[in-house]
Image 1 (spheres, rainbow, N blue to C red):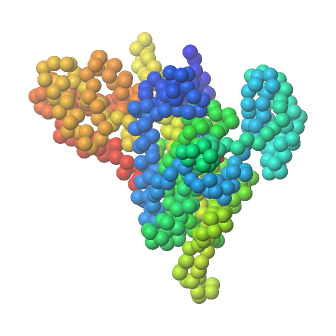
Image 2: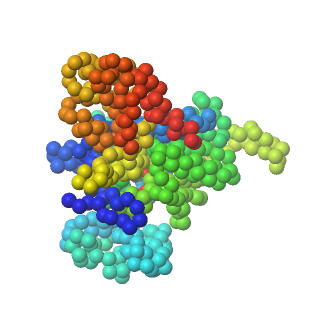
Image 3: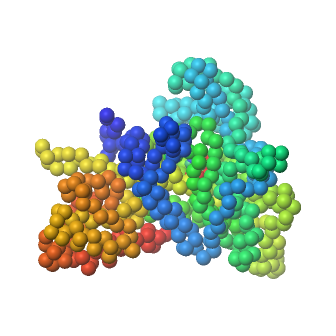
Amino acid sequence: MNTTQARNDGPPAIALQDIIAHAKEYGFVFPSSEIYDGLQAVYDYGQNGVELKNNLKTLWWKAMTQLHDNVVGIDAAIFMHPLTWKASGHVDSFNDPMIDNRDSKKRYRADQLIELKAEDYEKAGDPDRGQALRNELGRLQSADDMEGLRNLIIAEGIKDPVSGTANWTEVRQFNLMFSTQVGSVAEDASLIYLRPETAQGIFVNFLNVQKTGRMKVPFGIAQIGKAFRNEIVARQFTFRMREFEQMEMQFFVRPGTEMEWYERWRDTRMKFHQALGLPAEKLKFHIHEKLAHYANAAVDIEYEFPFGFREMEGIHSRTDFDLKSHQELSKKKQQYFDNDIDEATGKPYGNYIPYVVETSVGADRLFLATFCNAFTKETVGEGDQQKERTYLKLHPALAPVKAAVFPLVRKDGLPEKAEAIVKSLRSEFRVIYEERDAIGKRYTRQDLIGTPFCIAVDYQTLEDDTVTIRYRDTTEQIRIPISELKARIGHEVSMERILEQL
Ligand code: ATP
């Protein structure tokens, strides 16, 4: 199967199908409940995937809470009082416009069909027409004009890619929240939602944390947790899932200072992605021109996935919208007393509802970006010896396994020596023992899961307590004393090396 296409300028493009296949074959991501043919847009992380994802989450957590004295974490419940979602606006307006094709019976997001058409104009060298179409889409969405969206789809001659027809239904709004019942008796049960974002768990705990932590504005609250959205069109692997994980931080600031903090967090977050090893040219800012009702500025950090530049993280200046709505609906004051002196009046700033700058990144999208970026196919060797080598070029701090230890043969005391090395390293980092197959095959297996170091124990080891250590990216092997392994590998795989850049 030829799934990679040559580009004129640089390495071959990676196809999403290659990524999905590799992720499954090497224990990173499996389709959910696969024995029943899977559940659309739901995925499970396997033995290597969970390690990589946990490393990303730990790095985010440390970058947010450990590197900033004024950011603390919480872990709020997934279920929340239903009024939370009324206050946040999700009950009334967390909708996407959907449209069905009567021939293929497929469902689409009307806005995405129009976006794709605009992209087609741009690709065909007519950016003005593309922009005009986007402007019209924005206007119709702001006006909640579903009939207008349908008319635009018809006028643009947009056809269903499956049936090839324009036999479209009406456009309808579809709420993306999942609901369920809470309560043991049917009559007493009440409708609750699976949270569609983690942010609201932070807002409703704003005063709890501020008071018990004696926090002074500006300060932030960070959280990692599951969120659920009944996405209409859920494709593109872990990019758009119905159950996913968010890493969000709400930063509470004095009104009037939000733009300064917005710019600071925007730049801090971009630096984070680059420190993880995502190349600057594959990352870009996308400033929102059309703002959500609660925002006064918003920008996405986009990554160039195999299907193009797409949102990975959103940084939003959310004003006092959420806290104010919670105050109104709960009738509980959400104010903060600021006793710093306002130079303009010579008096304390006093009581106010803080403004909020939010940073929100999907753990699964960051995982996918990291995985795609690490997936490397290279041709090595000369002449008839040429062959293709596939490996995951993960930052050593992110790799699921940091080192694998191999005895050259399964006899003469080499396995025991190798096992002793594993034992001496495993309290520091994740290290595995591997003795099956020829040593070349063992190296290949570790390359495929991104293990940065392989340690081989041979007969010389028994004589002088040295081993060879092989570097994944260069395949270079050097001989070093066993006593140096811990310091050498420990330094390379430490998260500190990433955090120090921030
Ligand atoms: P999109 O426009 O792609 O649907 P969004 O603007 O609705 O995303 P936000 O509400 O800003 O996304 O959510 C913050 C982050 O949560 C996103 O940047 C993304 O990384 C992640 N995210 C949102 N929806 C999903 C999803 N269905 N699957 C995986 N991650 C998601």
